Image (tube, one colour):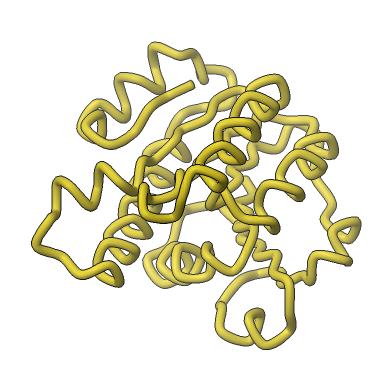
Length: 183
């Protein structure tokens, strides 16, 4: 199984995944510049221009992690899904309301396009996390989001490749329903 973080905003999530570990997985991070790659612990680190260097095994489950609304994630997740020939699950975060309507519109557009290229999308609403944990600073909300990503990846990784039905995924992730949406 591969876990791929796309964009600088997934550095902390990949670091958490690597520090806590997920059985039988390899992590990949894709960033825009070299200095960001130096801040992450991953099995494979790539600059965006080297996206073609990622290889996939036949029927390999791949979990894609991306923050939607910005340039890096939105542009690269769609092209990456074309290379994967196994189960594809996208765990995405949507922009905070204060990030503006342009970012939210771009995130919505990408989700619609992504739906046609992956088995499931698990969308984490950062605005909902901020409301639920309203006593946290914005940095703490980002950390909470990264922890939730780790928990979701852990649960999704336990689902067998041949058993990725909507019902199974929904049942596994029931405890996160207040701030995620399975598409």
